[in-house]
Image (cartoon, rainbow, N blue to C red):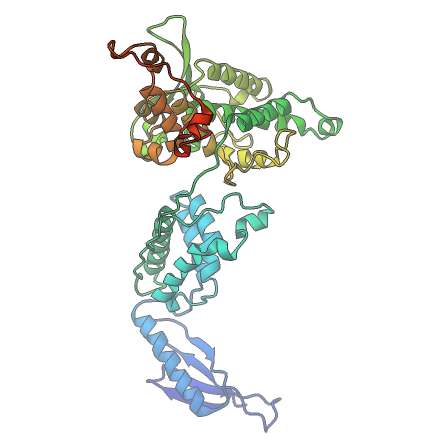
Length: 473
């Protein structure tokens, strides 16, 4: 019995075009042409359907297909097409063997993978497609209300910030790493040139700010929840204890950041021996809380530093109270080298308090703030970083010199000028007018004593441009 109806060989037998014999196919229905290809030095053969019944079309398509695959073979590239989705999965799996992939996984899942997912062959991605990705990212929140990860978790996005230079730079690094991995694996012949876009940074993203009332409302809510006893159904299910420990951990997280100005990333990896009670060497009856940070715990591994809290010894008092709660229920979590904010499931790893804080603050609604305290007056969402901002603001308003605040928070003068100008203005005014009361009681020129100063609103209304504003300007 014949195996083929038609059978043609080309390129020294490396390309074979054929139609299989099928006795069940009607005589008036022609068969579909197939291609079988082999390559020098490569075992096995590739078979592809040419999806045509015409010999001329099959010959043209078969030769084109063979020559394109032969070019890949000569460059030692894989002959089968690699899709973008499969490439991302392989890349993340490879990177996880030697580095943390949480940030890569978040960016790839939310943005990179969805944009390029239509490419079933990564060799077809051009520079124009990469430029289209930057346009996609810059206008993302104009066309989307959520991200794939938030949508799958059933959460709303808490921070829809404009696309920044820093984010674009980091994503450019990620794209280069992905294409470099594809090149090393032989999936592409060259790594495309990837340059992050130039963005207009006139609008500076700001974080939500706490005022005294909203911060007190937050602390009162946490204290009330921590002191609330278990309900019957919680005792029955055994869920009250773990919820109580989580609330205690969240309360100390809030107090620590608001009273020390630590960055959330710095507080997250603190060990218990790093928070200490010190005696003031100049005043033996005064104690203060000191937090010793290692070089690798700070931003950019700059240097070791000691952070002093603004409430003297009270932070340490709250710290001991927190440790007593942990020791009563989970004594294995106590120790010099144990984490201050551990994961209760995996105590050797820190817990993501930033997410816990964000979820909690979204749920707070009080009589004073029935609409909630998640958004500030400028409709900016508050986060754990807002506690650091609250600390810096209160220190500046208390008249602490700028360089001391900057050193304690491990930041620069420029960043404080940029984000805390309003608080800094009041601090400067207090310093510049520190002798104002004494100046009023002195006579500068004895020959012409200064008249007593009086403020007559009716008289001042003649010169409206001189009337003080409500804020005293």
